[in-house]
Length: 136
Image (cartoon, rainbow, N blue to C red; front, side, top):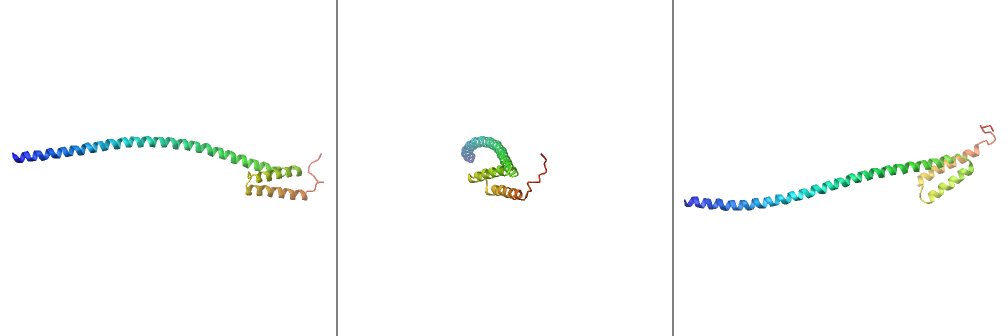
């Protein structure tokens, strides 16, 4: 009987210790669940921000494409004006140089325009002005 009593006391002590451990583990588990929920909310918020940023990025890319196209059309327009009358060509060349001076045109762009300007100016010298293909 005494041995049984000692064994029961040992089991009771062990159960109390295990209950304390279970309680601590349960509290830790609850705390971790709260932290997981908090992190899930944070992830959801960040995913929403990522979606917003992707949409803004797409809009910005569209705007960049629009302005690149617009700039290319401006350069093409100026180059086409280099084929015109000499006075018009000089005006557009001066305008192009102003844009370059104000850092609107890059070195590459102004060089390209300058090449067209020089080529057209040289070709004007070689034109036989008395022999036009058009009749008045």
